Image (cartoon, rainbow, N blue to C red; front, side, top):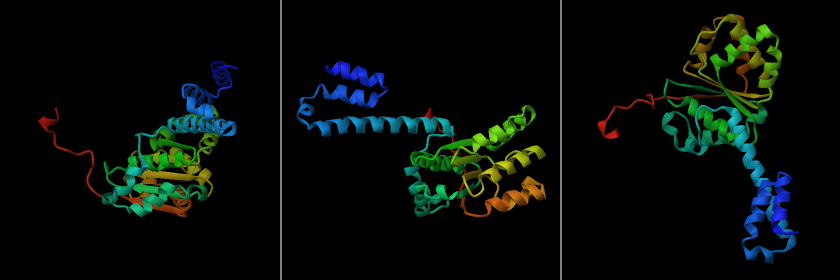
Length: 247
């Protein structure tokens, strides 16, 4: 069977990594001297790498992260108020199977969402399905499902994510229905799934913000175990003076 027929057959079987590599090998005489098993292994490894790359791309797209983030950039960012050694451990994501929660707080513009995206990107690279939401958007959309009877199904979808990122917590006041939904989300994940909660409010101000003693106690109780708090400091990274030289 000729190379082009083998390549076509590989593509028909959805083995594009195998096919692309075989196509390249046909142009290089060195591959004809390789042992049969060694050459087949190189083709299978190429297919495996292609599938892993495609899976990573799909998971990153599904996560809907607000920014593209490189976890490696976090290691040298001690000036924002956290230790690189601790961040390095967080980026290993060994805490996710243990259902730890991460709280990130700080003034506006200190890089909270970016840090959350870096951690989420590391989690996705490690194979953990993740999803980002702004808290107000998620609670509003779930409130709408209370009326059409699919609320429980939507909660089950959230439980498919090993890591859930809830951003801008404490920015917009919640209705009583939204407070109950927030509790349901936290309750569904407590002890089994990890959550990153991002917001300007310090943790000790959450009780007053939720403004419902029963729900506040329940939410904070479920977040009180196995949590790590990242407290950022400094001025907004977005601030800069306008300069005509930049035009």
